[in-house]
Image (cartoon, each protein chain N blue to C red):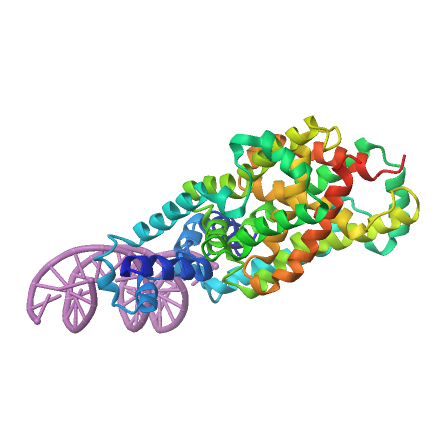
Amino acid sequence: MTTKERIIEEALTLFSIKGYKGTSVKNIADAVGIKDSSLYKHFHSKREIFDTIVLEMRKRMEHLSERVGLPEESDFSKAAEAYGALTLEGLQELSKNIFSFYLTDDFVSRFWRVANMEQYQNPELYQIFRQIFMEESIEYQTELFRMMIEKQIFIEGNPKVMAMNFYAPIFFLLSKYSGREELEEEAQQQLQEQIAEFYRVYRKV
Amino acid sequence: MTTKERIIEEALTLFSIKGYKGTSVKNIADAVGIKDSSLYKHFHSKREIFDTIVLEMRKRMEHLSERVGLPEESDFSKAAEAYGALTLEGLQELSKNIFSFYLTDDFVSRFWRVANMEQYQNPELYQIFRQIFMEESIEYQTELFRMMIEKQIFIEGNPKVMAMNFYAPIFFLLSKYSGREELEEEAQQQLQEQIAEFYRVYRKV
DNA sequence: GTCTATATGCGGATAGAC
DNA sequence: GTCTATCCGCATATAGAC
């Protein structure tokens, strides 16, 4: 890892624990093992470090689907069929992966906390936080469930309402257990109960 | 309003917009219209202002039930009967009041933002945020729904899972629209759709 | 690219006059 | 209880030697 990458790494960790304002350039430099003045050879300002982190998160989210094993958004029809063949256990496996990705992925879980903390100080972050952790998930699932209704895998209903019923508990548990990654098991168990209920309510018998 | 109360008032507003670290004692003093040094006659430190706000929130939450028009926790049986007689419109009215209280009540909505921002810097706040905005709601509704199942108003099922299905969308919408009180109408409409679905799924016909 | 030294300003907080 | 004046530490950032 280059020094520049290590700065980003340590900065993200510190920002996620102490917040942006609560983290000094010296804190970051200490964590990296260089003097604070040396850090300015890699970044022109503290803000630039922060912006680089945001940029990195944007990049990573472009490839989210692949990482989590989600079907491509471009092919909901195929995706719906794949899910149709899923057992309850399969559906739970899927939600478990999504949840783990958000809660325990090294980068994403730290970014969640930073974005949640700093959203009101930073309009860009306010927008990104809503986009990544709220709107995109809901939109994706809305399309997926719409297709599953069409294919008679799910019962009739409003797919957006279904998406909210699917995702809101995930979001709630992420908020509750963020920063407590050691309790992931407890969170996962609650999640599985919600998914089972979701399956019971919407799966066409 | 005494000067002390005005300090709390302006401090909460500033904390909720700029965060704790992002707000200086001078910022608060300016908002109140006094010099920063004068402020120290009312509070010994910036931290004491913050702690006073937390204390005030604790006080207000003790009387939450009355404010929102929720039935007393001590009498779930009576509460369940009251809800049993409720139409869908009545249930929606109730959730609307809860939501408005959290999202647009002057004190609570600002406190939500502060608590959400500062939770990782402050263990007490971390605990309070989870208690007030997560656990207490879920626990209350779990008991309520348990009673409503017993009284054959709701269908059979796990009341805690039901409570999560009821509250998680509320929490999600609060997170999404916090700081955008002007969009309350949009949020309320989405909420009403979720409540209608909840009613459809769990109400015994 | 790393260091030491330093500029400059803002932060929280106190002293003491009125 | 309000003010002016002041202390002191820490923050971001730069200059310049090695």
